[in-house]
Image 1 (tube, rainbow, N blue to C red):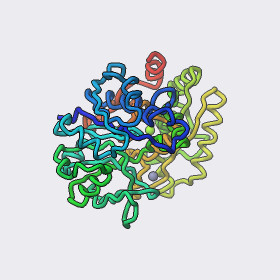
Image 2 (cartoon, protein in one colour; image 1 turned 90 degrees about the vertical axis):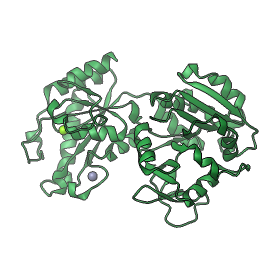
Image 3 (tube, helix red, strand yellow; image 1 turned 180 degrees about the horizontal axis):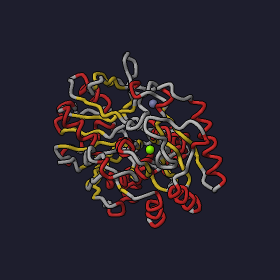
Image 4 (spheres, rainbow, N blue to C red; image 1 turned 90 degrees about the horizontal axis):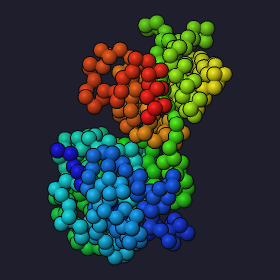
Length: 406
Ligand SMILES: [Mg+2]
Ligand SMILES: [Zn+2]
């Protein structure tokens, strides 16, 4: 059984958003014309959540006015309101009687790609009282996570050594964590610190960029991210162009052949306002069979040829690593998807990846986006249920038709 109840901490005022929050609580700051919290609630609904508890403080009446009983976002929302001066642990402690044995906890000012079953799996397999989601980065790290997924330090002062990730919410908890509360007016950070010390905290690593409203610059990034875009992520060899023969790599423009159905599909999509980002493994470089310069020269010629047809390629991401390098970018790893998201503000849970290889489907799933698969169906047999592509098509033309009639 998946966790079905979420709790969102919405009590913060966030003076650093001044002058915006002189009148608005932080979760109501607008991103792409909607309150930041609206995006979070929609994401929870899309992940199968039905019930949300909002813990409000500053501007709580405005939040309740905006979302009421939750019907406007397809959820059941209840509110627990507390004084402005309450800190986060105090708010949760106050709401403990409303909470189910397992619940998801979010911060009302953080948003990240969320695939509920993946976080739930880590939570259950690790068997600790809590599983937090972390983003691996050195700057402002407040968590130390082992390779085995245990949080061995949670340090809000960011002073101990070995910190290697930052906590971003999307945490699953067992109600047993309330034994680590004191009931005092303290920050939830202090509870997490105690849980880490007690060996009761696991981590799910999410490498995709996350959004926040912590300052006006970040709010501008979030605004761009949530603005709907017509950007299709697309594989190269076998999808845009004919593959080289087995065990060979395409290194020369004279050998380039467009897949005719794909070329037509891209032209139709481009005419409807779509643009494209290429994501492609090119291990021939790592294997010493061609050079990165040759790949980029081919890329330049491809963009030029497509440009003449009115098809805009916004960018290309290539992995030049050998498979023995075990990099984070070579498909089925999702690293290039994260880079595409960062560079072009692509919201992965709204995006499609068009590809012809089972690894394309797995990489897309790991990145949290949908794969439109145009390869042989038999090749998918080795994939697990969740790794399978969201949709299969005979060729790119069929997929374009679906996109244009959606
Ligand atoms: Mg391919
Ligand atoms: Zn790589």
